[in-house]
Structure formats: structure tokens, C-alpha cells
Image (cartoon, rainbow, N blue to C red; front, side, top):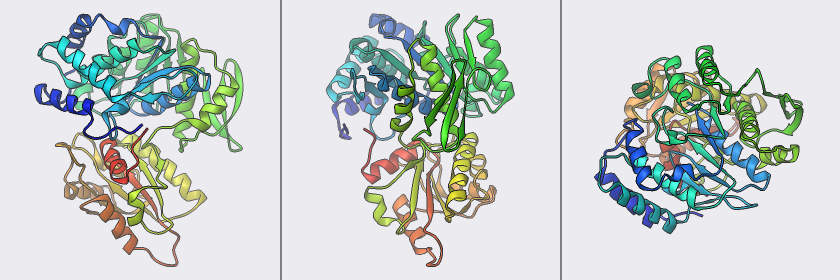
Length: 447
């Protein structure tokens, strides 16, 4: 269900953005006040799976949704940011079927009611959107809610959930340091803020031991039933299958539809989270979820759309929204695995915002990519100048040049094709905002 750019809800959000400050102002006071005026809809939700983390929380959310829908459950899902349309942030559950993006009139009505309840008081647009999430999800019946944190955890607007069915903390890495701290321990402490006393906690794969220790100690202090990846549950590939293991035994499953080895741990965290939330999980549910899971712009293969007419013949094109050094590393690992199976010259087309670490991101591709084209993100004041971004790629050991658009970069790659070499592999990414630009230009927005 694709929504038009000039939809009723989008117009309402644009109006709100002219009235309220942009960006983040981490606090729970404003959202708590507003929700009280609305009758505290956050207290009227079905069981909530609350997901935080630097990387992987969107994939975990997608796996949780796929698992629950495979079991016939209706599931409301909140994610952010959106890629193309605001409606992507609100998925309404359908009993026995696939959840649908919220109806435009329904979302517009919720936004108006929230704005009226706020009555012009100081608030951020994300807080208004979060309040609308709770209003929508409390008024539409469902069996579960999957709630993705926007930024951090402790003071994120979603953290008014007092009694989650389970809190899930996905991999912690350096990101949003200006808001969350410049060490992984500090960031982990902020993410751990979604844990609630004596409520179940699932800790996904953690690259940094310091972050893992903070998460475990916080859960222990709060008396939370705790499941830790690598200790209480795990997943690995064996003979082209995914082996998931916990105290219930081994489960032999198809490899996840989402490519990359990092998705094995993400899938495992989701399985454990759905179990910890009190839902029965069968082998049939897990098998169906692995092959049906969808999550746009996470190593998404682009096989159709308007941009293909500019691409080299036979090119393999991937789109990914990873934007920090840790995200770059897991994407580079996945691309390296593609290279092992089928060698191809690799080109990057990259757009990033100025709050990220572009050199750290590019460094992961230093031994993989032949050339980088940098492109400005549209409709974002934070988009990095392509010349500046190209210099960052140079600093990471790559050859790079700015380009006016993704289409122009694809045309330039086409001109560089050498007849006797394999067709190119192209990775477009560096930001979810940039990925959204690409999906819009390609005419293939998420549904």
C-alpha cells in the first residue's frame, strides 16, 4: 500500500514540523504529559516487544514480526526512520495475515487528535509521532506490538512502556555520541534504560565485551530474567542451513532471506525474544519466518525499477542503510562473502549525513571496492557535501569522486566496464535517508 507524497497525513506532519523544533530533545516529561491528556493509550496495548540497539534492531523487529505472523498472530509494528513515506513507521496488524501500513486517513486523524491534546505546548515531532503510535495501536486490536526505539533508550519517547513483555538489546557500537556518550559502555547504559524491573531481557550478539557487561549487570540489578546470545542461545550456519540452539535443543532451519552472516544472530535474538515474550514458537513458525522475512534497504537486492536503465548490463546491485563503522564492517563482510562465491568488481555509491563517521564506514571497504561515487542526500540539511564525503573515502584508502545523482553514478560505472571482466557489483548506501532517496527514485517504495 504505497502512500502518495502529498497524502493527508504527510501534510499534517509537515505542518507540525513548522510548529515544533527539529531534532531530538531526550526527555520523558513532555511525552508523559501528552499521553496523560490522551488517556494513557500506552497502558492499553497488547504485549510489547521493545527493541533497542545501535545496529540490528530493525532486522530483529522484522524477524519478530515474521515469526509472530507465521504463527497466525496479528502484530502492530513501530519503526523509525521511514525510508520513503511516513506511513512506514506504523504497521497495523491483521489477524492471520500480513500487517499493512497504516491507512492515510487513520494516521491523519490520530495526528490531529494528538496535536489537539498537546495544545501548542513545547514538544518534538518524534514525540507527537510516538504518541500517535500508542493511540493507533491501542485502538486497533492485535496480539502483539513490536516497538523499535528511536534514539538511545533511557530517554527515548518509546520508553514510557512500563511493563514490556520483553526488552531486547541488539548490538551496541559507537553512534549518536553527541547524545549518548563517546564510549560503548555509556551507550550501552543508555540502551539498557529500556529494561524494566523483573521483566524479561534478551541481549543480542555484542561485539564489545564492555557493552555486554553493562547490559548483563543492569539486568541482574533489576532482577530481570535474562537471556544472552552466545550463552543462553546461539545460531550458526552448517551445510547451508541455520542452526538455532537454546535450552529446548537444536533447530535446523533455512538460512534467513536477509543476506549476511550478521543476520544469523539477529534471527536468533528475535526467536529468543518472541519466546521470552510468552508466545509459543514452533519449528514451522521459525522455518516460515526465515524465508518470508522482509526488511527494505538492508542488503536489499535491486532487481527492478527505474534506476536499472542507467546501470551496467548484468550488474548486481545492492542497497543498504548501514551508516556507522560497525554497520560498515558487517556489510563489508557480507559483500566479501559474495566475492568469494562469485568475484565481481565492486563499486560504492554513497550518501551520508554529517553526524556519522564516514572514514570509519569507508575503511571497512578499503580492500574490497575499486571506486566510490559520493552523492548528496536530498531533503536533508544534514547531508554531507559529496566533495567532503569523497575526501573521507580517500582518507580511508579508497579512490572516490563526487557525482550529481545515483543515476549519473550508475552511468559512469557503465562507461568504465571492461569487456573481458565480470559484470560489476554495486553497493548503494551509507544512510537510511539516502536509501530512501534511492527507493523513491527507483519507484519501489516499501509496502
